Length: 198
Image (tube, rainbow, N blue to C red):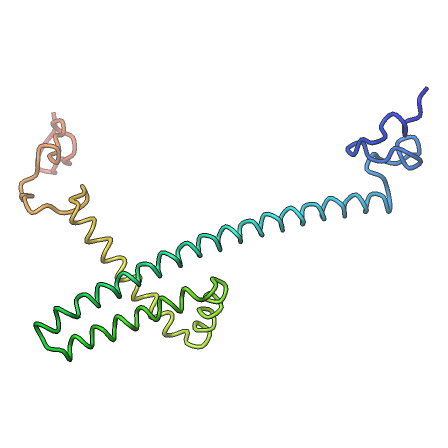
């Protein structure tokens, strides 16, 4: 007969069947310190895997945020360039003073884009967090205003597309054939006490 420890050695799922194994009255997972060691090992493995996945998720989120930052700075640069181009037209139509306002605004937007470009995503998140901590009322008000504007833009887009939920100006007050109810005789209207049913 072969020794149990040699027939399953190297099998991590079999547990330790040695002196504390089934022959010794124990269980396959071990007893006492060995069982606690197995449990600690499993929970450590789970923690390590969870930490690894959390780190990967954080890297993906930061990558998306970095891409968004690049797009935002490019869009701000385009707006600044459009304002600079429009400043010439403003000079000709309204005067140099108003054209200078447009140039100053364009320079401010370009400066903001450059400051965004020069910071890491983590720095921007830290600054946003600090701003919310210092001025929560302004942050909540800004979020509410942006939400309102976004809702109006979405609503106007839906109405403009003519989706089936939107009201149409050609609707008449007369119900269509689909809206009319047809009920069998004697059903749906209760008999009045004056009439008799046959």
